Image 1 (spheres, rainbow, N blue to C red):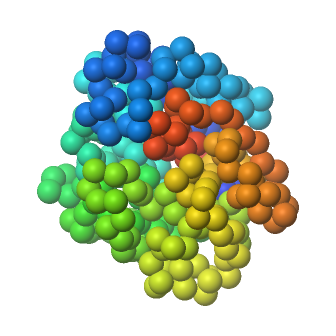
Image 2 (image 1 turned 90 degrees about the vertical axis):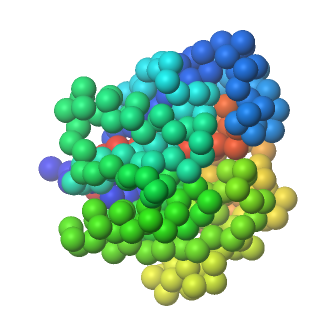
Image 3 (image 1 turned 45 degrees about the horizontal axis):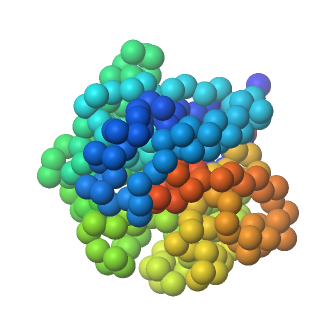
Length: 293
């Protein structure tokens, strides 16, 4: 029997939660009321977003991955499409986050209600003044979780995360991320890091802390370096559904080629309206649940 775990970014994905565009964007009017305040690059087109999301969602269905939808919730905004951020999956239960972006403050509670309805256990809840977003955490292996200290995830949030996981034998590694474009920009740990196998990660080194980059090398990871011209187009944001089987936003041909040169199978999707304009790639659009060895 294959062993299931939540503690991986690259093992074979068996189940995932998603927030379809129709449930998050709702309508063209809804988008028009919110995109500026939430710092989107430009206004997503509702019909185009639905078409892009249909293709995105079919990828999971075609790979026999069990998908669960987060429903429409009037208490959250269009950013809820990026459903990785509001919760963290562990083998001990879900960790309900506390968002660092004000416009997303109600998303964790929305996740919590869905998990309770599905009888998914809750390990803990990050409480104010702590903030923690799921885009700032990634599993390096089954007992090592890295968390970025960013404008979205603060020291108190990291302390609460450690208090939940370290007693259970999980090593929580902190990566101190730079200021970059400041508090209003979406800059998560997973903006510069995507594990794609047990010994292979996609990185953007110019914004990576030296200490953490050295940690990856010391752990035996080979680094796929995203070129400068493909960082802003989310070349570093790679979702893995099985070791070296990757999904990424179209428009990053150099990173795609580097992945293929490393033995990866890469599928791309058109994500102008569901990814690029809102700054959320395929990892952001998903809340992966269990994977199998």
